[in-house]
Length: 291
Image (cartoon, rainbow, N blue to C red; front, side, top):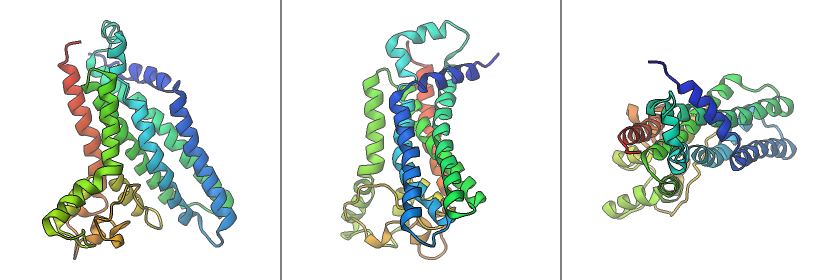
């Protein structure tokens, strides 16, 4: 049977590309990268392109998830809401083509955002700070693309699994707030209650395993292992763990040799889980939904 995923993906890329809000966020991302590089060049002496590269992690971890969620949260449920899903299913694409075509098309939009940000960093880095460490730059770009793709998968999975725009928006906004605003309360809070103390720099292993499953943490851990300097996760802090722990990876906080599931590369697994599980659940629900 012929797959129509590429056809749906091309249509989705065009449709998502018409979103003024999405392009405003992409423009903001590129603008912040430009302003940041110019400001660092103007104010800081004796800095290398490799050191400046880590600056990208800040605007990327803040803007990229929001852009990805906006790109994906209406992907499928928008068709159900308007009634066009029945017309679309009357054409050659089937439900599988729709879900994965939309996923591919919306991912391509986020890929454009990542590509533009890193292209600007490459040009400005070479112009202001000398040779750019291309291997580090390429690895950082690949990790950032995976990070953006993770949030697209999360949003498209939610969109496929619910029947209304309101539910889709509530779920993606709620999950984003969990990652950014509530994660420390949900992880360090129980630790504080169990041990009657703030989370130390070297906590129990179960805490490190749980804590690293925040996709934003996984991204900053991976990026910190690639670029010079460490990236601080964008997260609300409530003082439930030692201030010395902020910015350290799980491997750095584990006493002795860290097991494989606490090493930096395991962040790839975390991001893939957050991508694959919502897509699988959303696809299953959409495949069995009465439209």
